[in-house]
Image (cartoon, rainbow, N blue to C red):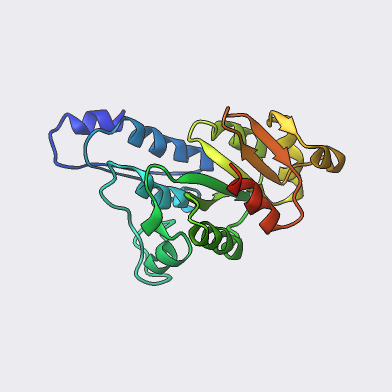
Length: 210
């Protein structure tokens, strides 16, 4: 509703900023862009909102996002550096066709993020991997982000992995034997497939096949 109220004031750009206390709060940013029909700035501050600073650049109405010049020089919580934007997330590639892949866990896996995004760039796959920070409620988070939609998940942390089978539509035999899921792909019909993968490369190949 903030976007609608601000747009009525007649400014050239509508700016909506809040703070994410849970990664699911980031959906409000996605909903803001979904209704925006004029230049817009929308992000969620805070550690849990960091992904919105990257994903905003997928949106046709996005004017800009914010980044820090150097580590420790950010002007708001959750801000990452311009170098990370370029070198880790490769944001110059992002547009409305870019699929979102989530690394769901209690901390950002920087090396894994760099690896996945480098593979996307090298193979010209329209995807970006971003961190979804959480230490519980994995099933509820995966279910909530059908809305965005997130096209695939890499899940780290045994408790989170054990939570996910309850919310996916199909569990592979290997995941069923493990009793947990560490990789999820979203099919063309929107169905979520829970997998058990042995390596990041195997996870990436599943995503690339979508």
